Image 1 (cartoon, one colour):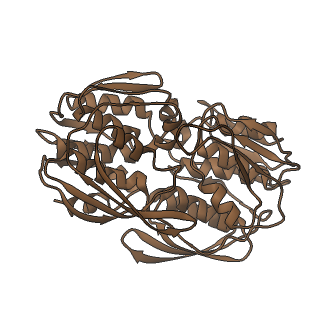
Image 2 (tube, rainbow, N blue to C red):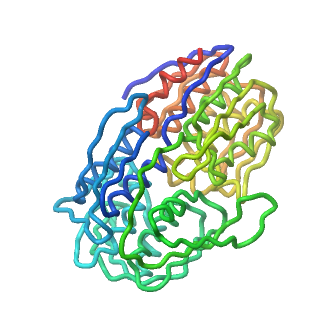
Length: 443
């Protein structure tokens, strides 16, 4: 484990290209492997998690060709095995990729007569999988998780004939939704997944592009779009994933934008950012906090709107984040805690139990980490409350193997009074290998 000190600075300025979207990269490789024929993916994220997905697809029989495109991007060509073609002679290692193990479970559970085992690193082996296992079992799946701790990987999957169900998710999760939709492609009857709150819709968009008749209907009209949806799929004979270019990842770009908001005298622009309405929850939160943010939409990639976002330093006001906003900004909530340290008033995040099941318990790691830097912050079971004190002293923060905590510590250091030492800073490479270089380019 390595550490790195990030010293306080002023006047961040410049433009960086958003790294490729991790969620879309995972899904593009998986759907290409499930398809018939060959698919070219440009701008695929070159990171540990997404490399794990490519290795898993190869382990299942897909042919994968990789070429370097530079800037943390890969050109990937995948020749798929088809919906009913995955085979694996040995356990599949998903590394640290929670998205991969959850989505892959849905596809493999439907492979009647085939056996699979999914495992990963120490972090993965602590993550509860009950939220995908339970509905899959309702569909007829046979999945045997590890008993210690209960319901965790390794997962032993005996493929079975599945039947569709109407499933109301108790907690909003794009990963659970996507898992069940993939299982539904080989299940008898309709598979219907109803969201309690809106979640990312990348899977639905990409399934539609691959020839699947996906039906997505709003469940209720919220004061602000998007609305939670009821998503329906039925069994299909084949997929044909078209060639695509992966747009930039707002969840990763957000760290640069927040640095621009917090460091005095800064103007930071991030280009090529995906602006899917189900991914821009943070921008609405920032608007409420009075952040000086400008958004320019310019094009489409992989069926997703893309553009640029500019952030300028300025005063911030506290806000409350709960309800529908939680799922739309789940990966950016640690940054909301950091912003709250600098905002006037008390910032409250509630209804975010999902944070306890990420690469780390992000409620605990964020609260403990920021408190060690001088924040006035307390944890709740489903979130946290932070009282703005005008800034952070600085100190030391442990990443706990979580890429977002590593990047959070770096940004906190630049905006602090005394600097921050980040232990385990190499975790940032899980999703954003070029993070430190891009951040340094703004100084």
